[in-house]
Length: 192
Image 1: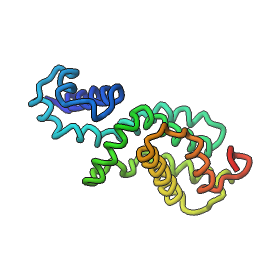
Image 2 (image 1 turned 90 degrees about the vertical axis):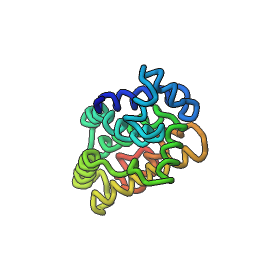
Image 3 (image 1 turned 135 degrees about the vertical axis):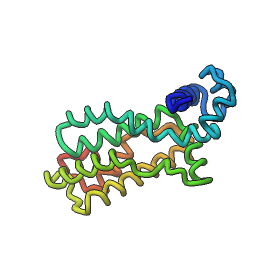
Image 4 (image 1 turned 30 degrees about the horizontal axis):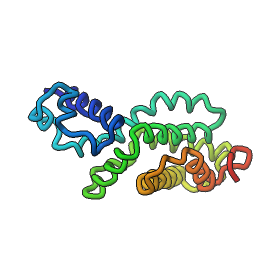
């Protein structure tokens, strides 16, 4: 059995989670959807929780297409906002139930699901630096520190979404907070 089988199981399970919700899907249902036995499942994964712990990597990988849209944005600030908006879209696609379980699993033991991804960090920090140089972002704190603060703010919105059990209020709340944090020049703001 290969890592391809493991990835296949994770992808099928995620599809089921998005359709039915995490708690409504059993390991047996995942096995049936993959046409595998339970021993095969457990050969590749320790538990259903382990699938959840792998959710953020596909979200970041799915950003590749969105990054192309970011490059088409008029300015560096908008390019950065495309990245955050894409993260919201990808998160909402997996649903609140999956994200709740992701937080629960990581609260029980830090599996690194919320660690910074090097490639995404590098792109975002580069955009922050360019936006600072262009006068689009007026907060002149180190670009990496700003990006990390904004990522934690985003994480806070995700957690609030999971706690409140409401539909995600959309990207507007996140963008407004980021405009304040970065001290975006007035002509680039959507919110005051």
